[in-house]
Image (tube, rainbow, N blue to C red; front, top):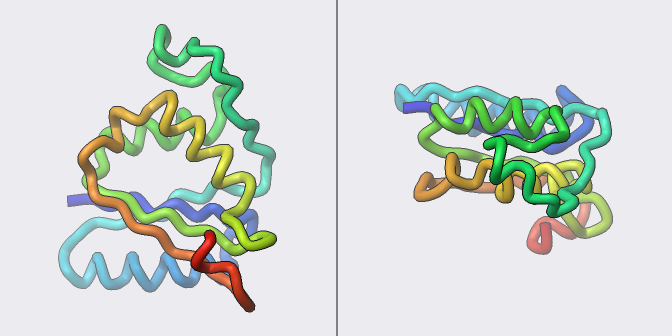
Length: 127
């Protein structure tokens, strides 16, 4: 069994990563393979609804979305982590998820998922 954990923070080793590391540690203690997938700090464009992914099987914007989709095929579950940015999930993660759901949603269907929100103050509920 394998769980893919997505770090939606631009900081590779920040607070969101630390929270995901705790989740990964617990999963691995229970003999579940865990991999943290880092979105990074490069811009992730939002979906433009062109539909080309329905024809080709992947998004025409070849970036982290297609890289994740390949890994998602093999994953049995997901954990999505985000810092709180202005009482919402990070913009990069939101754009990423919009495109993943549209272009590769079939790889996420019927698989369990969870979320982690990291904040200094308020906003985790909305995130």
